[in-house]
Length: 110
Length: 115
Image (cartoon, rainbow over all chains, first blue to last red; front, top):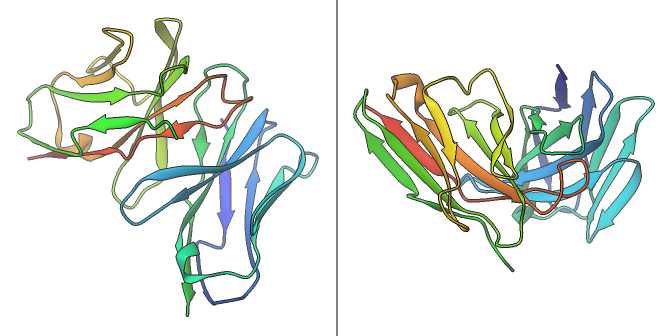
């Protein structure tokens, strides 16, 4: 069973700061997902990674398969980035469910 | 952009009653999932469904739970005899390929409250 750990659990930063959220997992995976959950509860997929790096707008996600570690970066953070960011992994390529971390609660203050 | 839709958004039910949570996945997707999130806790996998059958289920998904795809569009989760500890947010998700190959698209969730 994969254990997914995220750090920090809570992060408060000022608008414009560079944000880094970390995720580590215990067992080899086929893919890692970064998700965003807003206060209303809805979950949005941000990235799916199996190697290297992906960028979308101000968001960058990296993964190191050997180290079993991934990071999510937010550049030029904005109050609208305030949300819970969740790391989730899957071991298989079929209809395997995701194993989730507890999430990082991010607050960006103006 | 196509969306996964879930109904109802909030369901209040007496303990011991049956409840059915409904989901309409994105139309060309082939893989379907149910997850739950107890208040203040992490999201947990319940079950996945592919090719008209359960593909994988977690230890949470015991005999009181069942899933069905009764027609070409709906995907339902039934809880046969609800317990207080079933109170949670339930999320449906779908993808057009397996979870190692494609992101999952989530609905907004159904908040289930058991009294």
